[in-house]
Image 1 (cartoon, rainbow, N blue to C red):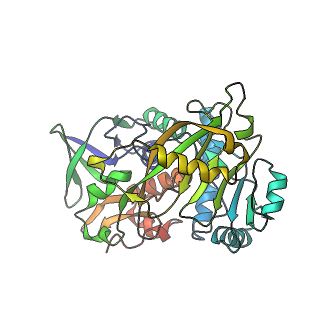
Image 2: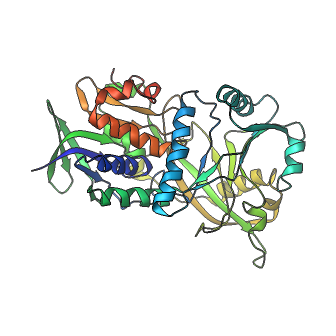
Length: 393
């Protein structure tokens, strides 16, 4: 039987980063994924993910994000691939909205570079938008987006170069906790023994972890999220009105369920190409992964386009050129869970409940997991200690 210091289950953004960081430290580590990452079945696809620093959700996130911005820059330099694009971010919406108030408070506490704007001022600065004059918004100069698939490719390449073993298209069917190790079983009947098992299963984590009482309080569930790409109906027109030259990344609280967001088209984005739009919402449609139809209904796509067209001028004459379905893994409160599983299972580490906002953190969460593989106590003592919130009972 093969023995590893660590087995990392799930090689999306978090798992691939944890694998690369662990291997770089000389850990004998195996990475396992039931698919062939990067892939479009989970939460780490779609060509872009928003990254921002003025986080209003919890003050503990900002120090992690400072580290994450630096890590994305370092990964980009080392790999020769641009993984982070600083386009700026315009967000907010109706008077007294929580996004603007929270972002401004975060910026004040952490001395971040942001600017408060009315809807009228924002529309003048960025003519791509037509926003209600009374809206209250904030522009974060250093925000933008990162490239999820490219990030995973870079991290897996780093891991392989450092000696990690990677098994794709391999399903884990269970594990057995032992006094000082974990026995991991695969669908093909083989087994490995490991000093630490790290579960980064994304939307599949609730199924893998359902028998553990310590996680039930978080009400983990996978939910469906719809993504569209928009382009001009006139095939002779470029993507200029939907590009980073015309607009920053944006997210608006418009008074309806969820917050419409957009990531502009950019050079080298590949296919699909265009303005990427979606709705960021907690409490989305829960799905059963065993009977999950990824088809995006025309009525759903049309309704989203109409909503975007209220605030984005060019969207009023746009075509939907591509659609996709993404998955969130939600917890009851919208925060991540990074912890050992329970006092009885100290060698199983869980990184789950990404809630649609974790990709911007993946290098630092990878580092946190690598620290924990070496010393479990770092989970409750380090910079991400506020996310070790009771999974251990």
